[in-house]
Length: 166
Image (tube, rainbow, N blue to C red):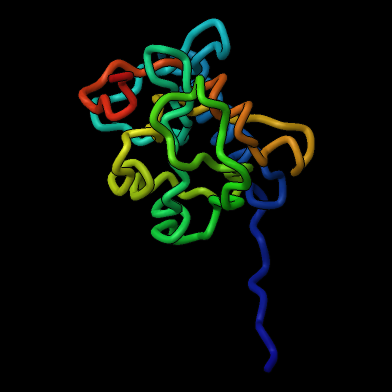
């Protein structure tokens, strides 16, 4: 197939109308109100119902609330959660816990922030925080282990009090 080219007239060969149109667009945007956010000095306020990164939380006495039921691992669509089943029982100071996870890892690169893990947890041990800035220099840094998840999640005051001493 041969495409027939039309000859350019004098003004089209000078390209001045195209350059002038480009300058008009540039000047129009130059004098508009700036919408750029100066991150990290300015932060985005997250709306109500925002589903952020999942983290593990502790009870008010500083103990891990997770009892290694593995429901969050089974319900996770991208299989981002990995729980190593418990070994020996934790120390008696841990409360009325029958089992606790030996390892708990969440791959934040695979997580789709669906919130199923938070909904299915019977102990209310995992919550979605309003965190949208997850960064790392390597893939290994984005796999959060149990210690990091607990430190980021903090202490949660809620209605589940199954571990109270009798």
